[in-house]
Every structure is written in structure tokens, then in C-alpha cells.
Image (cartoon, rainbow, N blue to C red; front, top):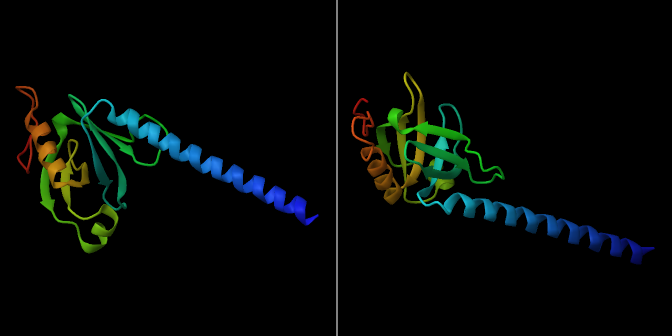
Length: 151
């Protein structure tokens, strides 16, 4: 009886291991598909009153698409129009934030829509430079803005 139990436990463990490998492969393939078009950076997102969520931001010509890092869908969780994004403030993360965001992150407070649509984005300093370049490279006549300059 104990031999059959050990055999069943081995199959159960093997099934669990296969499931973990398939989940990791799915997340890896999704990340590859998101990054293949270029213009992606690791980016944390926090809405007022919420906690930090880690993800990937993908630059598109007219919008910034934010995807959760641990997901399977190729649909973004948040989409920010370039015309409505304005960086209000930039700061270093607190010690608690740095523990979840990683060292070297910069926290940006951004207005993302008409009115009081405020979010915080966390990214590396190099990604911040690229983000500002993306905002400034808006087509002529569009009201893109950065560092608090009203759109």
C-alpha cells in the first residue's frame, strides 16, 4: 500500500511541476510578445489609495499601454492617451516603496485625464528620460506636456 501511495505522490508532484513550468512559459511568451514591437519599459503603477502593481509599459504613437507583469492576456490593464498625460512631480521612492519597486526607481505623479485623474508611475531613471522624450515628441499641435506644464 505504501508503494502505491509513493507512486501517486510522485505523479502528483510531477503534475504540479509541469503546471508550474507551463505557467512560467506562458508568462515568458507573453512578455516576449509584448516586447517584440519595441518601446517597452518596466513600470510600476499606483492609483490614489491603492498599492503598487508591477508591470510593463508599452509606448504607442498616441498612447501608453500598461500591462500587469503576471498576466496571460495581451490586453492592457490601463491605457493613457499621450494628449492627456502631464508629469506633475518627480520624487525618489520611500524606503517601503523601494523594497517593492527596486533600487534606482523614480516615482512620477502624473495627471492622466481631464480633471483629477492622477496616477503614480515608477520606472528607472533611464526609462524616465525616455518617457519625457516620448511626451515631448508628440506631433505638432498636440497638447502633450511634462513636469507640470498644463496641456
